[in-house]
Length: 508
Picture 1: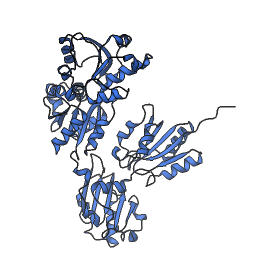
Picture 2 (picture 1 turned 30 degrees about the vertical axis):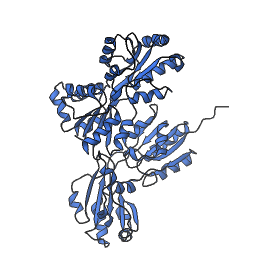
Picture 3 (picture 1 turned 90 degrees about the vertical axis):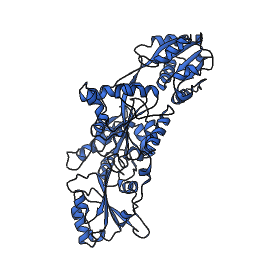
Picture 4 (picture 1 turned 135 degrees about the vertical axis):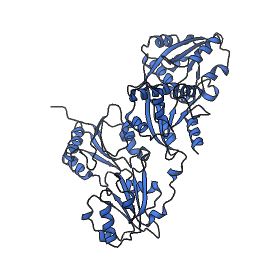
């Protein structure tokens, strides 16, 4: 008998309003362990970074007036990958059951005996008004509201709809004039308030507020999709949305970081209202050879101190330790010094607490505050293969320490600049650029130079006019001055939390 094929499962997931901040936890966990991702056009690109590297990503986006994937083709993709035993995420914008054509996909899955699960998302019909500060209900002005599609207004009962207090219209901007005429014809006042919210919750969000009489002239000649239309007196009750009062609201922050790093910094900034774009400016890789690190690990008992100055150094050192069949017990009585909260936090993942962390979290102060004489101490320093911590090594040697440097990892510049980051820079959509290391500054400059195909520094730097350059600490700031000609702010505490606080202070 042949081996029975394992059937997978299809998850029909709502991605919310096009902003990763409003993704449900259930959707997040499913994305993180998906085998195949089949997604729509209005899905936030940041969500695509949540899936495993091995996940197959297929864009089947449907946008009005543009070529789109046929529904039969989408159905076939869902069924075929499910029958191959894959965990398939069908990612749809908003909520999958609100104008999402999900019924056709469910029927196809049921006909093929494919298991599926519906996962709700926050619909733009509810989220967009809230984020704009417009209440859909009010005890006097709006005792009810309805959500409708403006795709084919001629099929709707406008006599009945005109009597409803508040209308929320999706996919209606193309037929806006027809919709307004239907409402006025059926008794709605030309002076009734109307709001149009485009790209709700994103850095591209725009809002137009007028009346049924004036709005057509206000938006004449503009391409409004995707947008939500709200009609009713509640528009006049618009509150200052809490998201708009946060210190970094309406600010787009470009974060230069290592490709493999987590989005911790993005989350810190988003909590302050910022929109973030992550731009990989470093690629972290194993060293060109493990030989020196392996020899040092074999001789660990001969060392007095282990110095670790980055999370990358911690991870590569301990992963190599494990690959050589050893564990933390081989450290014996070796003391550990680390630079930075993040490095210390990373060390704790290996169930170790550092013996020493210099104040202000910078390597330069490690020498000044070292808890004992460095003279003749044998120190192991696993570090980046090239270009880093040269001052620290020089000072350790000056103190007559016996320091053994070994490459634990190497960092390089990505081949090309991230597409989303480059488009945002070109379109002057970036308000702030953050740098957490000198290497990110250098590589950022090289990526811009390559994208512009020029060696002319003024032309490269002019791209950053009116952009705030934010640095995590003195060395990074100095590199900003040397390469970019300026730095606008520097964190007082040289951590990501410290840099976030400085940005909040600067823009408050």
